[in-house]
Image (cartoon, rainbow over all chains, first blue to last red; front, side, top):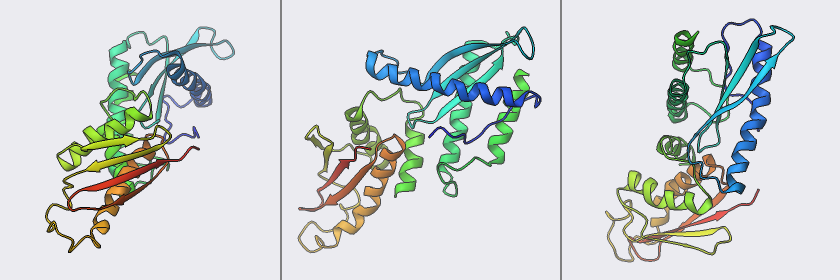
Amino acid sequence: QNYPLYIRSVPTENELKFHYTVHTSLDVVDEKISAMGKAMVDQRDLYLGLLYPTEDYKVHPSSARVAYGYVTNSKVKFVMVVDSSNTALRDNEIRSMFRKLHNSYTDIMCNPFYNPGDRIHSKAFDNMVTSMMMQVC
Amino acid sequence: GFRVGQGLIERFTKDTSRFKDELDIMKFICKDFWTTVFKKQIDNLRTNHQGIYVLQDNKFRLLTQMSAGKQYLEHAPKYLAFTCGLIRGGLSNLGIKSIVTAEVSTMPACKFQVMIQKM
């Protein structure tokens, strides 16, 4: 159904633009997933990599944003949007961030008080995301 | 059992690569999932390739402590209900809707029947 379980952005101005980018990149994620089934591409990796860059001329002429995707075996999609001016972020850093997200998500799933499909309100998850965002921003 | 199955499957598939198809998922359930939970694999997997799978365990861990005669045959299915939920929950989180039933014909062997529901 593609509704968000958790969404967070730093800094909080232009938040709507980030949310919009996340939403549109979901289509790209779906496309990649279905392409795997049909084209017999042996993409066993959970990490989907670079989705697509966006050029945003209305807000900042040179503010290009890039989205990365990651889908778990349980069909949960993680989407990360970063400013492409942040060139210090390398592929393996993105991968490890997705790993951390997946690990924390697994912990939440194993919490018997959490109902799958609910929005995520866990403090531990929040803290993990905050510390990850602090490292890159 | 359903909710536990969902959580377990999330943890077990965290590091595995993406599943190719339904049969791949059922094989995972029979081998890795069963081994992690019951310390052994499913002994026999049969399918009609049209959405019905039968998983046979000849020495089901939850039944081995009961005597192998006909005495408890009637009550044995109660001990299988949780495991049915486990399978159903695990499959549900992998995107498969199913109905899981179980039967015991000779202790301690039992069969789990999984019927995949096309959505």
